[in-house]
Image (cartoon, rainbow, N blue to C red; front, top):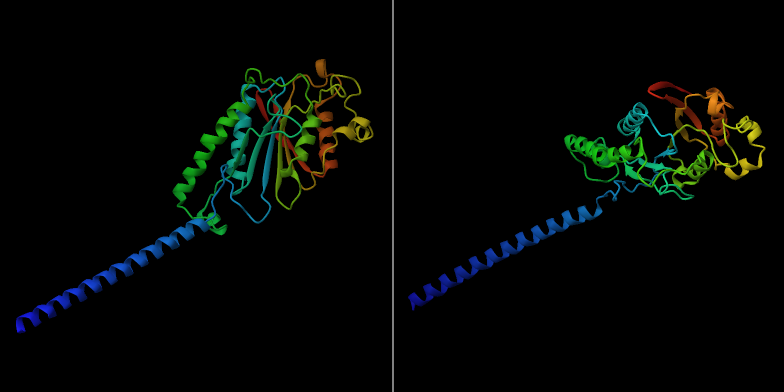
Length: 302
């Protein structure tokens, strides 16, 4: 009898040990699952960028829009280099975190009443705090520096090579007309350029010489009147832009040789600049002109 009683007590002790072991395993499993659930919950609720690198934000998103006039003649080698460097500087220095950068051209497949950008990207963060402030996951400074460089090298630089190529792609040359006024009207219609309290910057790369049936600026006498006179003409009513009130405009002016004589006998460089200065003033924008001559970079006019 004593031997059987001892066996029963031993069996009960083993059962208890097995019970406590199973309970401990269940508790650990529950904790692990709860921890995994918390991580998954955190991941679901962490703000992530969209396909072009833009994060959702409660405030209006800052916008930089670039319009490149692709009409002939295009750019010489120095102008092409300077323009690529200028847009790189905008990305490196001027674009804030999550600011949208869009580049439009007037090549055949890229221009229209509702133009499509050849590049659309949002500037990546420069500091981890910028990410954390909007509810996104932070990152090391080394990672952020690599990411920002990678965005430029893989997305922006190839677009700039195409946009500022000295020759247009086969079959994509802009038609012989150069409708600067119409193109600017299209830009002013963009949602990105509507005033919602955000920063709005418009960069224009062009010789700014309008050439359409209605207006052959500089090449036909009387076709570049003072802007005040132009405002009274019926053509202006067709091309008048929406308000650009509060927008910052930078014009990289491709200065054509011979302004004031030859093919451009009917306007001087200063008359051309004054016309567009008055145009942007009337639209409510501040404007800076940076003159790019063939083979030379010239300081800005404000």
